[in-house]
Image 1 (cartoon, helix red, strand yellow):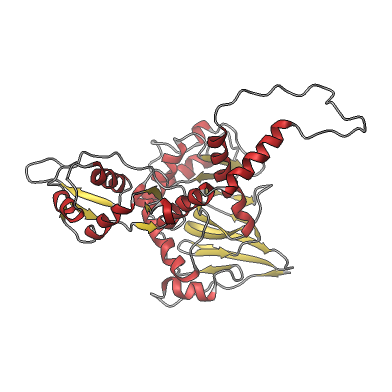
Image 2 (spheres, rainbow, N blue to C red):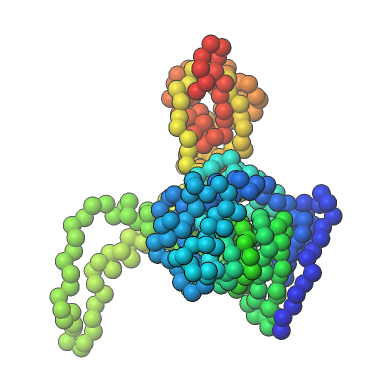
Length: 401
């Protein structure tokens, strides 16, 4: 059975509130006036060019194959805009007139301004539906005359939010455990949403640019995330050890034919049990959760910016939310713009003093009872500055930092 719903039109200014109440985790839907990302055509093109310049960040697909080395078929500085790139691709002899799709993974991770803009849009939605505990990933795609199904082997455990930035898009969505296929027709400015557990097929009849955010929404979605944390802790706990020799062939067996579990596997299982028995996994997960909370889930965040040498006269201005979470005897964790770090409990005095704007380093030191050059002050300030949670203004006569 196929169902073609009409686009859902919301009252102007209703924002995410009506979307959350009427559409989130419901049937697949096209929302004509949901909050947009604010990405301009020029910004979108710049993101595509920047992603194409980074190895492993883009994937170029034709109707029947993924091109392993697209080379000159990727957008570059000679393409003035996305429309010009689409025209060049239409005439590319390598494609022989075939349809194509260029997908950039994590396209926002190199541009803090655009990343923060999309993060803030997401934050507005989470205020109404709850915050995701796992990373929300982004894909920016441009294509022409191309059908793009779910990639084989990828579980449909994520909810989809797809903004059509240019052109038009048709998505055929089949939610799990239903016999209904939804055919969604969207154009520039529309948001396409489907719940977790849905398989989809994108259809571009002409040039079309989209930004898709995938929101993990199943309990099992946390398995790779938690496994990564545990694996890192186990590698740290194991330390350098001599390599074990491989087992002989044939593998020795007991007289009754039984084969014992190799010592390397038993050792790893014991290491896992020991790791789980301590507080390290919970602490590591808390750090990651704090970072995700400060990023509205959007992952990965842009890397920290370079630090500066603070002067007592530098005037500080708080420009981003600083998330603080407590963890008992292990002390608090601060997070901002997708980055988290542990701090001593005494640093909480700095957060109180930073609530005002235009506070100098010297004034902050006095409020916290510290010397302006003490590591207890400059360390936390450096972390906040590098995470872009505070900006500084130089004292008169000094250059900008």
